[in-house]
Length: 410
Ligand SMILES: Nc1ncnc2c1ncn2[C@@H]1O[C@H](COP(=O)(O)OP(=O)(O)OP(=O)(O)O)[C@@H](O)[C@H]1O
Ligand SMILES: [Mg+2]
Image 1: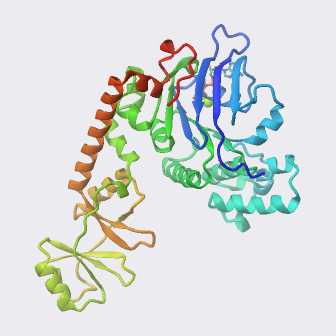
Image 2: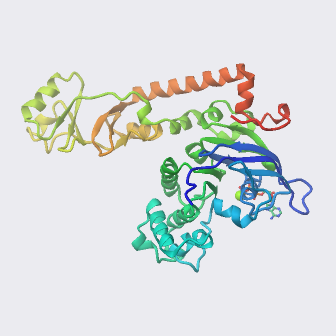
Image 3: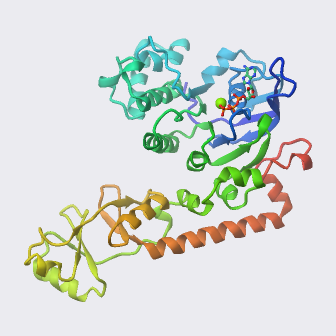
């Protein structure tokens, strides 16, 4: 089975009525998720996110409507067969406590009848993929893992049979914020390699922004209020409900969506630890700015040197200057860059390449300018969309009233 890449998911008039409830818990939901896309469902507690998600792999049977995966109508097929195509990871990690890590990950491949050797290889590969050392973790039981490690195993298990579709229900809900950010980064990295179709449920809007190619903001009964890119939702929320959900600081949240590589990276004068002192002196005198950056032998940023530093340190490069506090990579978000600039005494941050080598600097002025430009571009695009009603409607399938078939997609 090497389906690997994602498959599209279409929900058509999907409805769930639980027995004894007057109102349906999920009411006539129609949405189209493209192959390889990460769509995040956000909405308040009890609005029907989990119910919607579980109908996609028929852990909950729909009361009405259809589900198509990769064009195939799966509403009537054997749920066991369906679940092999659909990985599923949940909040509490959902690992079986009496099974080892390896047995948990091997679950679906075993059900599917993979040969033993292939399963063993796959378990190793999956553990590596989620950053756990197989030798150390394979034989442990879930209770011998931290919360974050359990979630990683949960994700490894969901991916083990290489399903084209991955459903994740608040998979990082139970860990502390720092571990959560780490797991989010990991998921983004995985997704860049794997291109699964992911439907991810959360009630944390910041998580939605970080992870989603598109976000569906849901209200009660899973009604879609807005279904669009994070940029569009941040800059032109459909109504007060969405604004409320976006919360304060939309402009700051926008910083999560752009990377250092997208902004103008400037240079600064540099010297290396092997340069003769005279060169360093000359560079300091002639560079025009206040500071030069000292690089180590491998070209990595090491210290900021100012005029006078060398005098005070009596000509010793080892003693002179201020150590570089932090650096950011080209893949870092502007939010990370801003954090680094704000906390660095020099008001700027060195940017590094893959091997930590110096590639340039970003300063406060550049960041501010970039953010203004980004927000302005978003605003113009939102305005433009309003003036092109066809496209605006296509981009926002919440306009169900105007679209009786409810088939609008971007
Ligand atoms: N098995 C069930 N039987 C009856 N009602 C249910 C059942 N499961 C869920 N519900 C109801 O359906 C509605 C939607 O529940 P669901 O679990 O989908 O919400 P959710 O958006 O995932 O909420 P949360 O963010 O708290 O996880 C709720 O009102 C809930 O009480
Ligand atoms: Mg839920």
